Length: 345
Ligand SMILES: O=C(O)CCC(=O)C(=O)O
Image 1: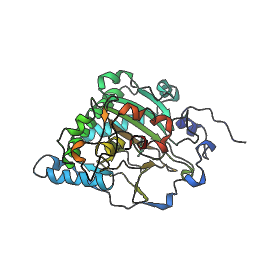
Image 2: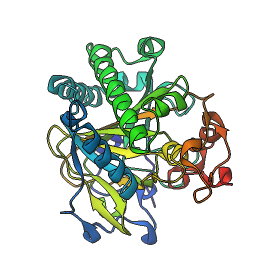
Image 3: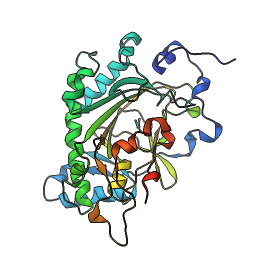
Image 4: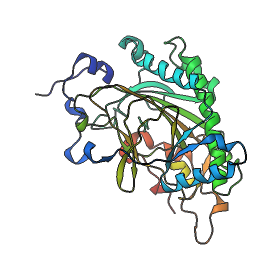
């Protein structure tokens, strides 16, 4: 008889139990990570953003454009976010997930509409199999609209995370400029196309897992937003799908991973593809990752950039608001989260 587990968060389940993966985390045989069949020494573009300021700019812009076009993801170094800001972000994330259960539960919610909430898996209300993850989800831009909702424990949380968010926004805007230029558009095209813009963040916590071959931290999915800036601690777990194979993106100190999301796929009229990626877990180490999802504002009208459409490359999508698209994201389940087909022409 399967045991019933009463904890709301995986972190507390793991610490009170567990030498086996509970049944509700076990994936069907056809949908397991197949950990031996992953490319672990793949070459992944690592772009030095220092070159964006100065004579090499056009070369770096070209590299970014090629990476977006070929893979939909790349890594960046010299990204401009100070090391103490990045280290602070990871430290405070870890401190948060090590707080006593009662303290963490103060922000718990299963309602995806809440702009600040701690939860588990992806959407526990709609999914059949759970993911080996707890996460704190925060809206971060405009910062002053949201920061007062954020956890106040650890006491430095708001200051440290706020600083990280301001820095990632600046990086996102620099990347959007480079991406616009790589498509032959005005530098500010993408920034303007996202309307008033929004920035969300997840702080993902993956506890060690006794049977990592049976479950996912997060199954393969595409991001709904425009671009994602991912910070990972030193523990491997991120994998992206490239040329029909899962490829491990092992963390390199002082680098961040950038990936293209669904809205950039539309804005670029399918020149860039939103990339399928997943997080796997392991038997020995907890893992923390912090994706920043840079998004359009809900009312922004999303459509392929007219200047890059022509007879040979007609617009692939009708226009729609980000809200129209995003409304389905949480309910559809992560593996079906890319719902662009309804907007295809
Ligand atoms: O943990 C990771 O490396 C990936 C996280 C991710 O894909 C997400 O939160 O959407």
